[in-house]
Length: 343
Image 1: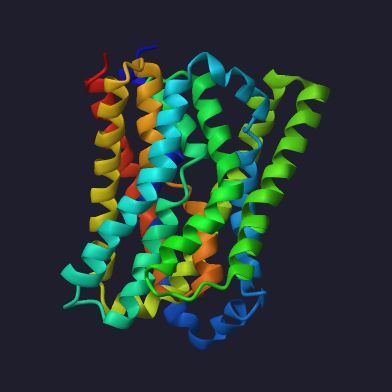
Image 2 (image 1 turned 120 degrees about the horizontal axis):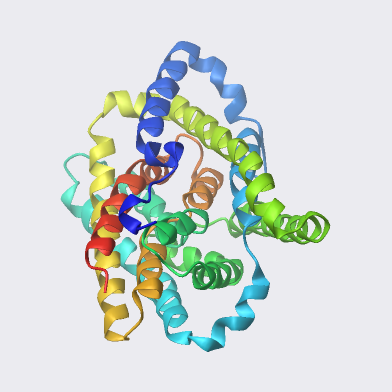
């Protein structure tokens, strides 16, 4: 099968449509329910909203099942692609995202966004920038004829780095925006939304593969679990927009304003990684997934941390959700470009 005939599954292909429907449904529910929704907002422990935490955990856990850290032992065979991924994701992307967000929300959008709220919009963009993608990268790699084993190595290493770099990097970048960071909440979020599902996923992977075999695990178990992740994503979006409805109805332009810097950042990182990969003489099968990993985001984690730090109705949470809305059409355009430029 040639790459031109490869297609996303139906849900992923129309993810932006489903997100749009969730926006409409969430806003409608928020308007109809009114203050009665407040009890969901108040259901939290250590500033982590319990209903949202459960839903996001159900989103993240299935993707963590795919991670196999034993693949990292092969990293020495072709280190340049992995080095490029690490440099782009952790030394460049978070800072360019912060820069674009600062330019737009602090300056270019000053006529539409109140100065006291600009910092939270910037914070939401930063959370997206510091959370490199995990699960969807396997889809983008497949669509661009990427090396699946090398992609697994890249994703696995990124997940390990998240464990140690996410909190200090988020703290540093949010600190330069003069936002006070409750580090106990930030650390708790990483433990809840990364460490717990990652450990659970690795253990489940090992047990089930040993008992039933790798083929059963990939062709039977993971497809059965996928609807759980999809339903959790949709319910999370409905809840978020139920709380964000007033802000959006009051300023419907805000979705477009938020989308612009996120889209610019995506194309900037893709082109930077793509041409750097060519300079390093990486094969297309390694360069293309590296560019996709750098461009896309671990939006589930970004959404969870934004809610924990700033609240369900915050501008930061809204930015991370808009990240979900724009990601698929942007990534599909880059998949088409990567295939067109295949070498």
